[in-house]
Image (cartoon, rainbow, N blue to C red):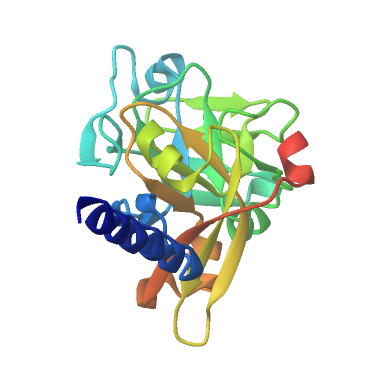
Amino acid sequence: MTSAIDRSVIENIVRQIVLDQVNGRSASDSAPAPKLVVSISARHVHLSDEHVEILFGKGSKLTPMKPLYQDGFYAAEETVMVVGPRRRMLPTVRILGPTRSRSQVELAFTDSISLGIDAPVRHSGDIKGSPGCVLVGPKGVVELKEGVIRAARHVHMSLDEAAYYGVKDGDFVKLRVESPQCSVVLEELKVRAEKGIKLEVHLDTDEGNACNLDAATKIELLKQEPCACQKQ
């Protein structure tokens, strides 16, 4: 009798496993999906401590105005004028803190057209060989020899979230956005995985408008097979 009962239990377990596999489910599917936040990163400036003092006066520090989604980052009270060739300008571009080792200007494609700057698509911090511009503050002027880029789309995530999606730092994923008459799949989002980071996708204003992000009904991250972009 005991053997018959045990066999029945085993058969039920095997049957359930087979059904789960047929239906595309696994044990990991029971884990709740991480909270996915997609943020539109409007044009902004990152400054070094040296350039903060030149633009706003000796001893000046950035003044936090509004915290950003990632802990420790903020939009500052301060803004600067960004001037491109032939005196084309964006009069009030927000500075994001904290300060960095090198100053950098991040634009959308339409911003770079407006300024007359052929800004390359780069990931933040990768500014070598990029065009420059002039920054104008209330106390001074800074001429950047390089540092103007179009920010490449990317996704921040914790190490646990990377494990959930089956990716690692430096991999690429896709973002699928369902919205009325504007559903799109955006490819080549670089994964930036590190400890203590919240799951957040960064798109620029052009990308956010193109997929009508404000009216989105469903947003999901999808794995992307290795492509040429991963060799860059």
